[in-house]
Image (spheres, rainbow, N blue to C red):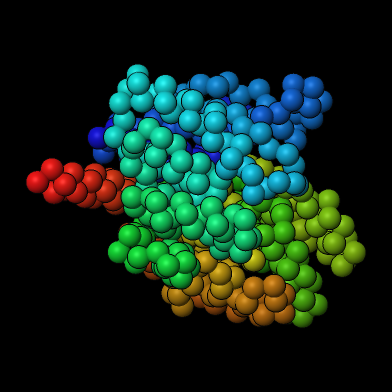
Length: 403
């Protein structure tokens, strides 16, 4: 079975951790099928690419490259920042169609699987119709939870979901959202993300803290996220202030990640008088993330919206308890054995849950066991089964029509 996986959320030579979870799925799928990846990137005018390299790191990425053992193609499409967002699928379609039409002539693939419903999935269903190939759409989170609330995008999303041959989602909550859009429940399969247990594993906390330069006796909270509105880091900083004012505990927050709100968040911490309790670490190599998770007393993700955030599964695999918002698939993962759920956008409730978590005697092995079923191999097996089911139904339908 030859599969063409389409997703803008995929690593490239300039952004090695972009959509790293999609890479893990593709890597595991290599054992099940012949797979190549099409990862569309926004087109950047050459003068902007040179002048603003940090803002447009993908500007000089080659149109074809290998990421690990996977062949990846990068067709470019027009994106006008902050305007005409509903047109992104239309802008993506021409370059996607040209590339896939050529690949079909050269390689004859069996199926298209698009991860991220808008614009990727929408454009992929149009391409699939043109090249007469079945399409499986994979919803990740905000592509349904957020984009489906925008009328012009919702119309395209609904049409794509109806015309797709199969749909996979990261959580039961996403499945409910899709079935509420009048999509048959039988058409939607829940496939959670996985984790690499050899990378994300329990390590000695004191040893890791010494390696990272974290002093003894600190109450350590770690978050790994993009510094934007969706991840809700500002609520975590407010919660840290409340925790510190209790004086029963001296909390320190380590923020791994970067993003457009970094300066704003730093100013917020300074204004609240807790800048000395917060460390902005910037982006860290993916291989180093397990060290920070193991160094934490509690991992926190105070998001406003989510799909099935892999950082939570990874933290739990490290035996570190998690406090996270009651959004997306988070309530399906967090239980009393591995953490606590906080109310979204509520720093007071968040501080209460963090206080309880920091003062609880956790069993790290028990925490890890709660996510033992989450493996990339199991994830790939489920995708391969979903692909096979779609192809089998098409074959059965073709035989029925011929008779």
